Image 1 (cartoon, rainbow, N blue to C red):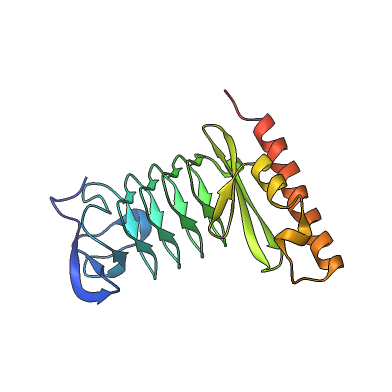
Image 2: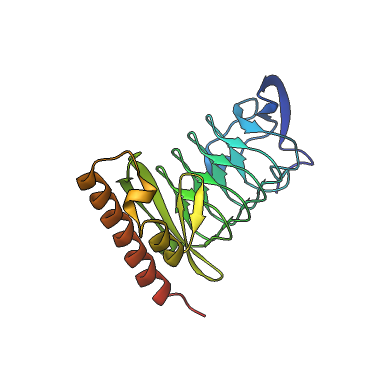
Length: 204
């Protein structure tokens, strides 16, 4: 589809990442030759042979890979060993990390955090709830090989893990007021229940 190289690393760097510059037009994403794109750690992060593109302030680092017709844009960050492929799009402030795989026609956006071993291939495979808890964070529920994984900030686990984590609100939030502790625990238990419902529909 493309010439040997569809982009190059521009001279502009940021925290060890390089801005990319298109060498050819990529009509699928409205990219013109010479246009600057997003940021990658190395040419291993973004395929040279298809329509995949990184634009805006988006970052791709670590061993992460973007390929196929995928696009990462906005302020999104793909890192770790994550893979974004197919017709997938990752945008907004979304993060895709660890061994997560986003493929098919999936759109991961907003404040979503897809991590662990999550496998998102369609828009029904994940959801984000927030603001939740003491820090008002967004919590993402996403399908994975084992069922469903929940990501809240840097924490990732199952519905059972989440219930155990908030089983003793006074221990979890020792400095918070009693009514706040109860409210936050109810929020997280509701998310665990939602994760169970998603898990029940996973095709095995």
